[in-house]
Length: 270
Image (cartoon, rainbow, N blue to C red; front, side):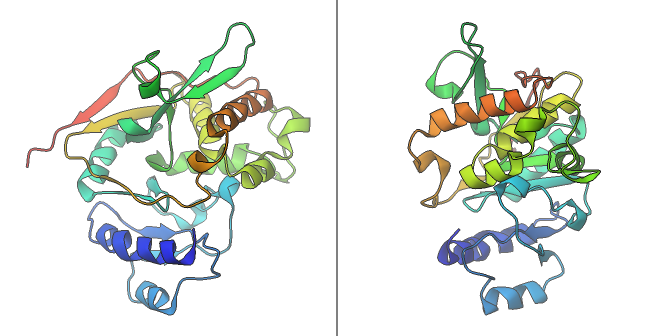
């Protein structure tokens, strides 16, 4: 995120989220090329108890490594070009009460994976473009509500930052592939949401990672994407498919996420 986009996002969305009663706290993970927010933004942080800046620097692969700074059982994750209305956040939270171990997001954020029987390779696609399945199995975490415990599990179970320290690898992982997973995600700026879904499917008995919500009131804001956005890169779908097959090779005993059995509908009665 460049400095101007970062400042615009802070000005447009943080103040709205701060007024939302269901948002207990707002933690900003600053990835801008600029070293720190402007003096005006930092002054704003100092004058509010609800908004905090996460210390340290992270990449895409370790974006979930912030749970020591989170005090709530659920966390809403929004990228720098996304945001939710307060009403929609309330709907996501209601769905999370029923499905507390799942990734909860809006239906437009669902994606599907297809296993080719001939090659045994996975193919990534957007369901609305190919009429193969009505819903996808993958919930994009660019705008989603997730259990904070799942973020903690990501740090524990995804190498090289295992519970025994740097270099520890879970028994379900191929050692030669596992060592570089975080580094690869940081380099490619890809895969972290796929891996998060794989982990959620592994930890849920039904092997379903996500639940999708339809909300009649809209409430998801899509802003201007940066020049480094994945969808603007060459061969983005092929990169995503390669990502899926990398994860499957890396964790061969983890299940492929299944299409959700449930769908949540929230009606706006205003």
